Length: 356
Ligand SMILES: Cc1cc2nc3c(=O)[nH]c(=O)nc-3n(C[C@H](O)[C@H](O)[C@H](O)COP(=O)(O)O)c2cc1C
Ligand SMILES: O=C(O)C(=O)c1ccccc1
Image (cartoon, rainbow, N blue to C red; front, side, top):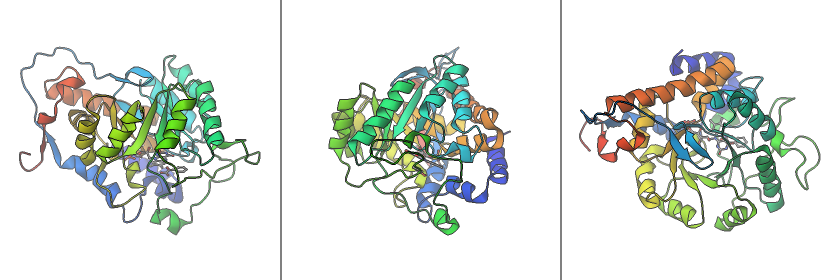
């Protein structure tokens, strides 16, 4: 099944309210639409006769040496898509050599997620996405859970000082998980009542000093996710981030922002090779991976396509999505005369309908 067919199947099998939660974005969904459209505006200018007989598209990421170039971006509530939820996603990512970012809003505990990943591949890398809690002791408890589970990096989401306003969810009245599902990592945290807690507090009071505090409590590498402005990328590196994720949260936060991939080159320039730069938002085919890497990304994240694969076919569906993106990129790299991702350079990306 193609990625498009998996999406169509997912739309058929999902509760329409949950489909809307996954597919939708903030405001008029302009940022959401632009993430995908932006890739249509880039074209690749292959180089020829480069003599690379073999290819290797693996990348080195914090806590994940030799990982595939496609990372599973953190998305909330996988058990809405499939009864096995994040367990199925973890097995699929591990089997395909992809880093899985599980997180604060997972419906399976981080310990069960890492166990499922390791069962599928003993060297599987799982990262933990963290929503910084206004009370530092809560954040710290989450970090301890991720460390104990064997996560090899943390990803701090910084583009959600407040929750985005999403018209589809407001119209559908989607405010809570169905009975039996919960944000399992949020159970029994310090100062919270025992039992399930689906409410993940966001805080506009957070600042770079909260990142400093986090870095002081963990030895894990910490990536900062949700950077669009090059000055923030510079700050993230200066504060000790091990990586920067260029992302507009899949168009789910501020609707007025540009497509994530359009923000990538300026961030890559600001970071100047000091740490890896990842890109997520709108990656839907192997060629999109190639374009992002040619523009300077070390790896890309995918959100919704993984949810469509999960809803349509559980572990198998997710494996299809990850394999298709990885193999599509490998094939495009070959067509561009490359043997390694580093053979893709920015001069090989031009505007469609013109030359630069
Ligand atoms: C249903 C859904 C839930 C998400 N939940 C989170 C989350 O809990 N934390 C986070 O940092 N990003 C979250 N994201 C954003 C993704 O990590 C990623 O930035 C985005 O999905 C990438 O765009 P794409 O869906 O076009 O690939 C979510 C995205 C979706 C679609
Ligand atoms: O929906 C999202 O984009 C998201 O980031 C999120 C975070 C916490 C709980 C639910 C969703």
